[in-house]
Amino acid sequence: MCHNVPREECGIFGVFGHKDASLLAYLGLYALQHRGQESAGIVSLRDNKFYVHKKMGLVSEVFAEKHLQALKGDRAIGHVRYSTTGSSLVRNAQPLVINCFYGSMAICHNGNLTNANALRSHLEGMGSIFQTSSDSEVIVHLLAKPSYPQKHDRLIYALGQIKGAYSFVIMDEDEIVGARDPFGFRPLCLGKLEDAYVLSSETCAFDLIGARFVREIEPGEVVIINKDGVKSIKPLRPQPQKFCIFEYIYFARPDSLIFNKSVHSIRKAFGKKLAQESPVDADLVISVPDSGNSAAIGFAEESKIPFDMGFIRNHYVGRTFLKPNQMIRNFSTRIKLNPLRDVVEGKRVVVIDDSIVRGTTSQSRIASLREAGAKEIHMRISCPPHKFPCYYGIDFPSNTELIASNHTCEEIAKFIKADSLGYLSVEGMIDAVGGENKFCLACFKGNYPIEPCKDVTKDILERKNTTVTLREV
Ligand code: SF4
Image (cartoon, rainbow, N blue to C red; front, side, top):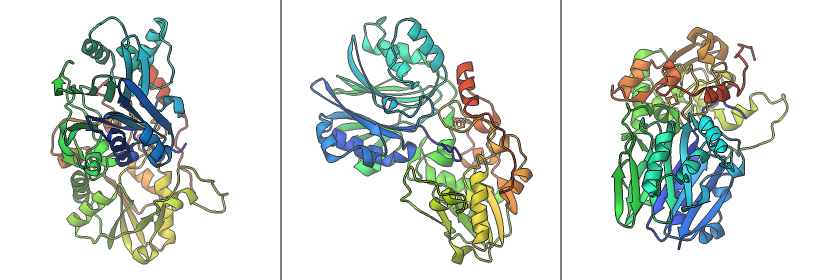
């Protein structure tokens, strides 16, 4: 699996009190597809019976009309997944459904629990039998513990045990619960559609189903949605807010509101700031679509250099394809993005991208622009150099593989063969999001808000232990 771009773990969705609950969940997952492309699943509930359908694949591949008809009931939760912990197997696909002493429940999780392995060992020692290798199952076993007869006490107990990043949607016979960790790493939003309540990782899913965005679930907040309406509790000790700034940089859709701000506007502000910090004399600004588009528009506006489409994206690339032999250079990069010769030929081009992870993808893109006749190529990155791994659910490679963790900007420019390279500064990025100190910056600065447990660190470091070497291609 290629980790040249960071990947988001999951998108979660829930609906309570609508006759077309599973159809709404299906549409919601469609809107959240960018957050996970490995598996998709929906669990619905009618007359205390759970209906489940989940499989490996994209939402459009997993669900057919017959599946949605079989997912009965006026409430449903759904999940799209890209695995960061737990291998990519269908048994790890969510929602997870369990039957325990207290009844049945289904759960969807976005994020990464930093103490999952320690909790799992403890629970297994106490006799729990795990069915998956996913960290999300830990919460299920904690919820099933018989120490607290009251359901909400069990929930508070379980949330009190886990550490790390999480947004959850949990469904049982009576209600749907949405919960967000006290630092607020991952987003979770509440919406309303007629009399029904909806929960979603991002607001773009509300737009698709015609729901009204009510508000974000706050960090540390638990909302309980049942036939009496919505109840909110804040059972956990408050923590400093640490929203994942990578949601703005790369993951979230530009048409979503994340942490109550428009992703498109924030990305434009990143581009403007980048133009102020790293100006360049050029003829044209182009973006690496799609996530670089908004920042490129901001850069062009600020620098007064015209913006044009320099790359065309092929939207129909499947998740797997046969790799041809070495005769076709840059195939995997080219199949996704092809430069527009008419636009770039003979031009001094500024290319706006949202990140450089290993550097190999940027190298191929720049090579293809040169072949298309670009005279100069100035790479500008709408976030700071990416130096440290993430323990909160974003699948960057280990820091030995992150090119910026052991190379200077000049060395990286040489490696990717750009005429110049500029990154947005950490200060510029914070300025662009409004100057507030409420974001996690650990992948840029190494200042982890929650110290990663040893087992997680080991797991991430062992993913691949190869140092990036600056090789010519
Ligand atoms: S380390 Fe980076 S990617 Fe991970 S939560 Fe923090 S800001 Fe997001």
